[in-house]
Image 1 (tube, one colour):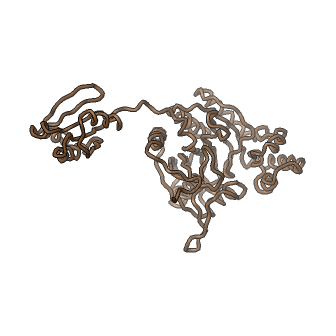
Image 2 (tube, one colour):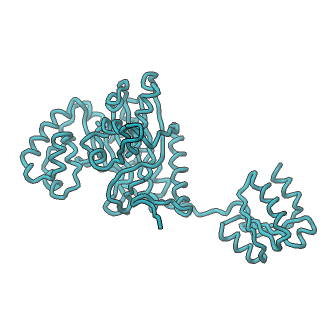
Image 3 (cartoon, one colour):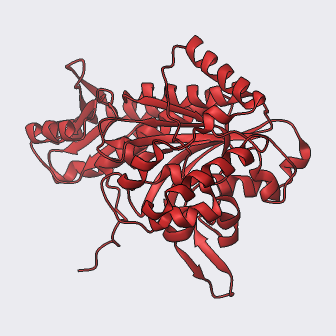
Length: 409
């Protein structure tokens, strides 16, 4: 038997109810914040992610689904969403138009890594990106949007916060950090040795317990910020305080991608085991330039959908639509005619097997229909249909033509 590839799962209807509820909720909140939908291709040039995500990242170094296509192009399945949205922003010359551009998106991403709970090789993200706002208030807006989304879904969470500085304070801090790494490089892992040469700050994100024990004594970026970055970070904390959004400062929070600067944040849950991060983002003011666009301030975030599904508190299911059944084979054509009319405005599910009234009522319960509509021999002869409202517990018999005309009206 042929099975799905490891780490690439089917989404069945029972699971998709949660998936759809998440997308509907998150999309509606994004729209309320003034964001518009954008969709980018699943397949992109590999160079896009090498230039944006960064050669030092695990995504580029180890996890991309990369191959040469029939035209000889070096391509890969997208491992994350931001780079593709920035590519579209530059390609369509929105950077030249100026102004503010706010987008949200959702869809599958692909990373070749060891599958585990909440971490798949094909997974789905919901993300937003904002271009053209050089203000820490936009950073706060991102955090508030994630907070609103998680609250709407009933998901408990904690917010971790850090500042990564900018080109004014990062170079001096990087030198301090490199000197510290060199003082203990005999004890660090091979990945950190590589990162020291490519992007030293990423050693702070190392998951090796031995390395983390060493980095407790590493110089803190937040203690080496320039006046501008420190002022922005203090302002951000004040905004969050004013909106009663709790946070904790995590001086080792650097995010997993190379293009971040200044604000970095991560939402975590204590209910999903070791892979506790459920959303993360921050500011990336230089990425548009890296991809040959006009210098444009930018900030965004992404949520991992699969990690959230089990945590979502679903609303109580509501009965809706019609279940239609026949009590004898001769009545099935009339049931089909009624269903065809109802589907112009309602959900209508037909059972093609002639059954007793009791069996049809059970069938209506199984699909959580609000109405059970049945035609038997008497109804067929009289041109009527029997309907029971399963919420109000009321029964009625209507002319079949009246029902059809009513639904078509």
